Length: 79
Image (cartoon, rainbow, N blue to C red; front, side, top):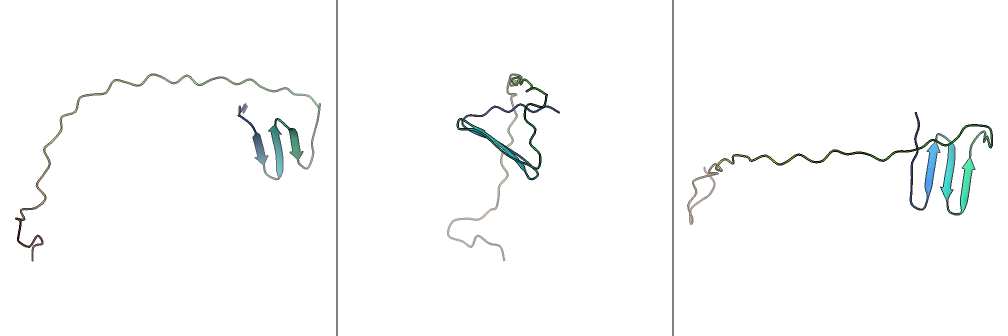
C-alpha cells in the first residue's frame, strides 16, 4: 500500500508509538529505530477524477394527509 498525502503547513504521521512530523521548520521523528538514507524513495500521488453529477429527475409529489379534524375553540385531543 502506498500513501502520498499532501498538506498545507504541517503533516504529522503517527503509527503505534512512532511519530514523524513534517513542517516548514523541518522533520521531527520519534521511534524505536529510525533508518535514514537506507534505500527506498517517495511515491507519487494522483488527483481524484470524480464523475459529473446526474441530471435531477422529476418527481410526482403526493398530497399531504390530514392530521386531525379538530376545530378552533374546541378540545384538540380526543378523549
